[in-house]
Every structure is written in C-alpha cells, then in structure tokens.
Image (cartoon, rainbow, N blue to C red; front, side, top):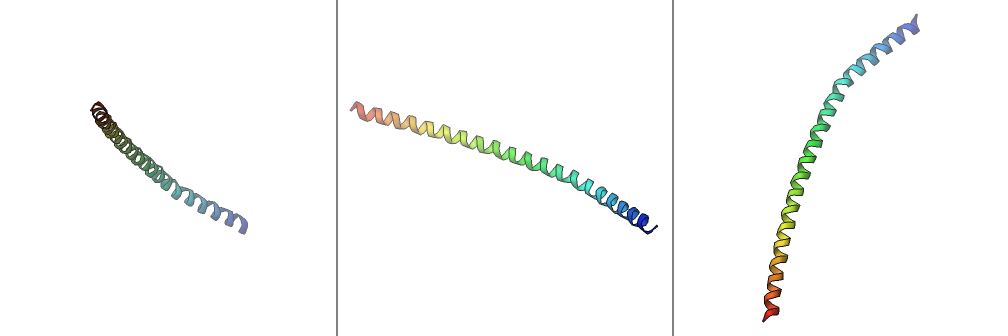
Length: 74
C-alpha cells in the first residue's frame, strides 16, 4: 500500500513536471526561430554592406588605373 502511494505520487509529480515543461519548450522554439530570423537579417545587412565595399573598391581601382594610365602617357 505504501509503495503504490509512492508510485502514484511520483507519477503525479512527473505528469506535472512534463506538463509545465511542454509550454516552455514551445516558447524556446519560438525564441530560437526569432533569433534565427534576426541572425538571417543581420547576415543580409552584412552581405549588402560587403557588396557596397566591393563596389567602392572597384571604383577606387578604376580611378587608380586611370591615374596610372594618365601618368604613363606623359
């Protein structure tokens, strides 16, 4: 009788524990999805900035080539 009461109480405690963790798991997944979206957004911004830097570097290289060309013509 005492053992069955202990097992019943243990089962009730485990049920409550699993039930309370179920909601936290959903929130964790939502937080992870939100964080992943934020990281993807930041990566997009960084890619855009890198493209602008590459474009600016190409313009500087083009201007330097024009200057070098003008110097060698004289």
